[in-house]
Image (cartoon, rainbow, N blue to C red; front, top):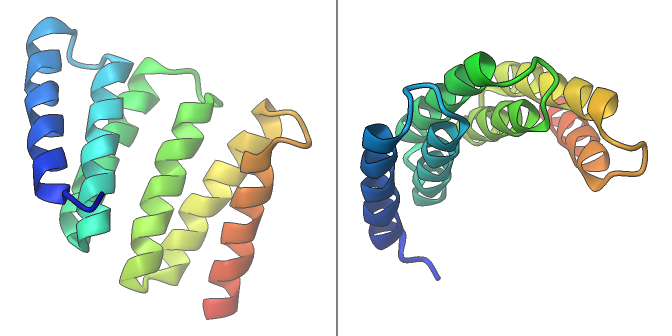
Length: 127
């Protein structure tokens, strides 16, 4: 709906509640940071988006197995931000990490595999 300020306020309020209720590296905290990062991304505030997505990734790395699909999502989100910032080499690196996890953990016909491959192909065209 484009109401990014309202969404951000609600996500941040939710994050504060999770911080009180959950251990510091709980995956739900990572999801909250990811949601906040997505709002900042949609607002065009890429440095804030990157910071939130990186925090999400840090938590996912601690809380989840190394090939968990949520890790792939974090890598993909960071790749998207770098892509929008025009840093295509960093975007490619993160897209490749996401794609590798997707290929290892998802069925061969899963749409995330095709999506991560498209992201890699698109960023390579920009380089």
